[in-house]
Image (tube, rainbow, N blue to C red; front, side, top):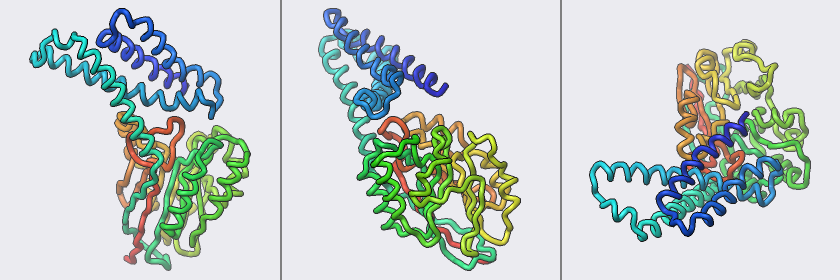
Amino acid sequence: MFHTILILSYTIPNIYLFVRIWQLFIRKEHRIYYVLIYLLLFLVYPVSNLLREGGTPLTIIANYLLPFFLYAFLFVLLLDLLLLLNMLFRVIPRKKLKSKSFRSIGLPAIILCSMVVVVAGIINFNTIRLTEYKVTIPAGSSDISHLKIAFASDFHLEGNTPVPFVERFVKEIETINPDLMLLGGDIVEGDREDERMEHFEKLLSSITTRYGVFGVPGNHEHYARQDKGSFFIKAGIDILSDSVVFIDGSFILAGRNDSHTTTRKSVEEIMRTIPDSLPVILVDHRPTEIEQLSRTSADIVLSGHTHNGQLFPINFITRSVYELSYGHMKKGDTHFFVSSGIRLWGFPVRTTGKSEIMVINVDLVKN
């Protein structure tokens, strides 16, 4: 179903893009070449999707072509809006818009602008940024007054993930020196075991914090059954699957299964096992059930999954779907955080949000 929706979302704008470029810029003697080139580029993604072989040159090209087509479509759409306004106000003579100079400048400008946006998105995707927050929660009977949390979600580690990126991530965590490292699901992609994945296990296992490294399963772990795999054990990540741990009499850490799991416990089932005497930090891959969680004793809830839309203007869709699709919000007495993810699934281009590690400084105060 997901790939069907993606194909339709790819095909319909491309039909519009093809027709409008044909009408606006392509001279009669060049149309056969235009059709052949456009058709060749258009078919790259559907063919790579049918082959389903990640990491091939065809798949790599497709991953960059999709965002390119998206922004070419948006630039042509913008041009059409400007042309519509020009019809109303007649700023530029119609004869000039049909001239050879308009055709020779217009199409290269659209291609160049689309390429610039994609390149900027590639750079943004490969740049790790820190987002820092400071919140205050009741200490209860906790024996600590401060807690520094490093939170990252949606790593989507696989055989094609660049090793230097993971090395930079580990170094960033060492620099942050958090008391607690939390991973918000979709940590590992697929179920393969190869040398690169083993290297990732060693890199992640080198992360040490005062209270440990914990994570929750996401929907991609569920798809690949990695929630039952050995990656997390070898990487030194304690996975919380609808489970609760008491950390040194200082706070309580809870983690939920992804909602794809049919046996997932309800919020009420998990929270009823938790006493009110200690602060509660809960990790849930998807930022859903915010209303229910805000009525529980959870002090902090951490999520990912949304990628903050990843590509503009998809972030507006995620904002309409989730009450909080990115950032920080306090509802009731609960602080909610949603990360845009440290990496992405699919296209290695990010034009909205950032590849981030959230650093949350928590002050625990006595009533």
